Image 1: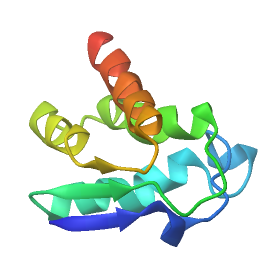
Image 2 (image 1 turned 45 degrees about the vertical axis):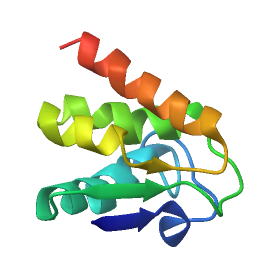
Image 3 (image 1 turned 90 degrees about the vertical axis):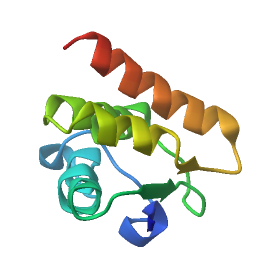
Amino acid sequence: MKTIYIKDFSKYPGPRYESLGENSGEKFRDSFLIPAIMDNDLVCVDFDGVFGYGSSFLEEAFGGLVRKGISRNKIESLKKNLKSKDPSLTAEVVSYINDALRRI
């Protein structure tokens, strides 16, 4: 299993899109998350060690996986491997993924 630590991307996650500023959800998704998902059977995302998350970062990074065409099987696997000391954070991420799945 490949573990992605968001703190290795940035301790200060930023806005939704790269055009809006540094450390965006779009950049995290496209540069870190999608390559890991495509190259590994199992991916775990560890959310600890950063100074907070904006909903736009989380929605773009994780809901955006659906819009980018990542397979449902890979997305469902990822949903089971989200790690945080704050369970409400992982629940929020799962809700963004589920919302995106309902729209396809």
